[in-house]
Length: 103
Image (cartoon, rainbow, N blue to C red; front, side, top):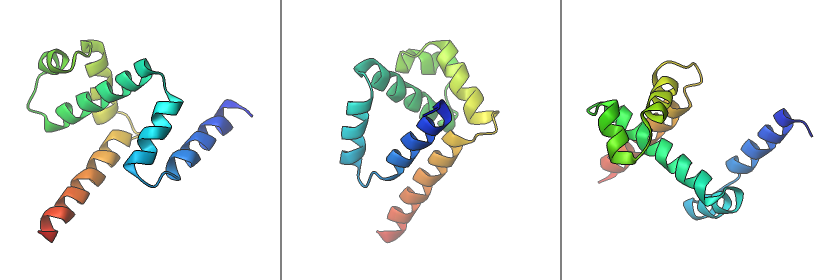
């Protein structure tokens, strides 16, 4: 299997996860502790950048991420065409809005 097929297979597997618990178990099996820590760090950086009330240095200080990591996440959040971060952030906001409207 080539790398592109391996990537598609991984994404298909992720899309089959039905719960947060399943996702957690899968990620723990899939990643080393260091890889999980890096993913969590990048996601936190993304959330803080999206709030846009913090400087890169502040985010670096709060998260422990290097300013290089903060800059990279910011580039993918704001300038790259993939829009993966933005898509997930938007979905989370929509879910939160839906829950608020239910109350």
